[in-house]
Length: 293
Image (cartoon, rainbow, N blue to C red):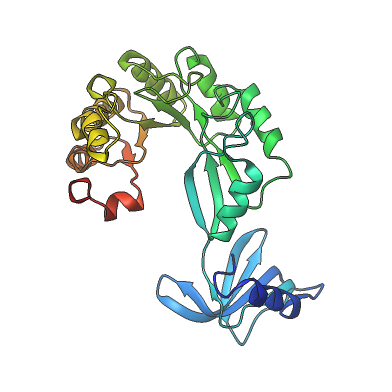
């Protein structure tokens, strides 16, 4: 839980006067707020935690005993967010972003868990050895919980199960150039093989879905030039390819950052047909329309 109200001075004053270590009790931690956000709305509650998990909700004025307690008063208390799509870039390109700055920024915005993408770091997270390098880079630098995606690239099919067993959330692939040479895209046969392998251990494959045959270099610097280089059809065709191969292999597949409205109906139809496919979008795709800019 994070303090989402007031400025730094107010937060500092709160932490100095309203946080107590009591040294005994049924729970590890109790956090109280008159504005605890629940599915039913804001309520005055005491949130009791045991073993890192919310164990009980009690009336604000009747908090249970705990090893530690905090009273937020009128500051809102709400669940932390999970950002499953973060490019931290450390090690190798830490000057772009590193674990210390990425996780501190996440905490400041109320994000309490991030999941780091496998590309951009050097080495990319395409085998267990690279995963351990990344975990070592993150050690002692994180202000929030951190998970990791593995990568599916040409030539590392045999490494997907070991990555899964080592604790990655799933494996990511690109169907078009990723922008970094060390993380090449999968062609159709490579995607089918990766999905079949992932299905064998009931893992998850996530895909950056664009058909490279329909992409082009922008013809100029204007926004319209960029839009013409990335037609909706390129995304729709790639999404349909993932759907078809997920249905064929029985794998779980997820499409990242869907931006084209043309993809919604194929995804809806696939889910209705029982294909194990999900998708995500981004807030700006829901509020900004390319044809109105």
